[in-house]
Length: 374
Ligand SMILES: NC(=O)c1ccc[n+]([C@@H]2O[C@H](COP(=O)([O-])OP(=O)(O)OC[C@H]3O[C@@H](n4cnc5c(N)ncnc54)[C@H](OP(=O)(O)O)[C@@H]3O)[C@@H](O)[C@H]2O)c1
Image (cartoon, rainbow, N blue to C red; front, side, top):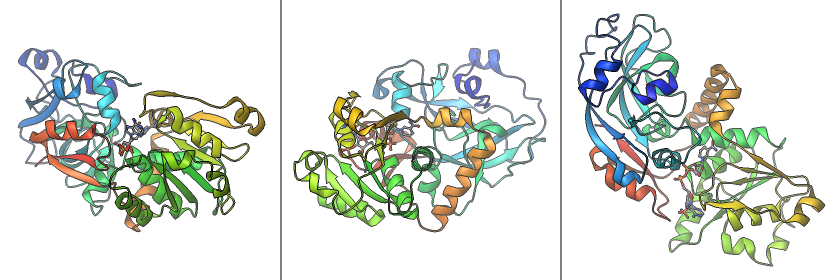
């Protein structure tokens, strides 16, 4: 059985070979889709058959599109980013793994080509994004179940739409769910130039929060600092600056942060904790340095700091689809008002996926690789 569909209830509906197809296909005589243009067609997809180094295990394959059943939606994918979680999933190091073989990609935007007879929530021409992780977005077309998709406005910038369903949602929830922050309160974060980090900066600015943004030093630091400040970052510091003794005066001019957002781990997270206000919370949502969080005993005892974790997939399990849709509507509003833009992106045609996969794991790239499907 095709992995992603089984995992998500989404009819990914593609085949790698005739045997797989025969074992899985539920029949081409399903209800006719509401579009004349839904003829079965060839699909190009980035597929992996086993876990390992993405550069070695991911292959561009021609697959066949399944029929559109009554509750299904035929989607032409437009663009899909390569996120660290996509890489971790292919490596087999993620909290949620599809059955193999699987199509890569958890995020992206597509346009509805045709819908099954019982589909009511979307129509041909609509733009849709995944409702859950593991959909398999690195493909030119697919058939998904209606419940696997969320409709979004078609006038969003393409890159914003393609990068909407994971990182901005994570940023928004972390800002809202752990501390009762008020305008003027301060948030500190590391990896501030990441997709999540850039969303945190912008959503925090829209909420009237002040941000201290930590990045790794690099040759073009000033350019990066200017970019993050143009998004609303109040301060941009390097990891080295954060460790300096002079930092003890830094928070005389602004309130010490009540919330720290950590996607690095190791020494970087220890430094975030050092600057947290008494009683403050550090939320860990990523581990880019692949090192454990190390918390000073005295900081924990004398400042009563709270260490928490966040995983968007768990948040979705704990909340209803309607609540996730509400979150997407809120974020679309921020995008429409110009308060939330996509992270810096490099668009790469699907067939050049090797180049995009390599760039996505290079340090200091400061640009998210987005696969385009035309
Ligand atoms: N828990 C959740 O629900 C959730 C949701 C979304 C994302 N995430 C996680 O959040 C993190 C960021 O995701 P993203 O899509 O925003 O990433 P991204 O845009 O691809 O950016 C990656 C970031 O990680 C930094 N980085 C990479 N290796 C590092 C290292 N060894 N030490 C310090 N920093 C390092 C990069 O900094 P440089 O520019 O200096 O290389 C960059 O800022 C990932 O760990 C991802 O899995 C978690």
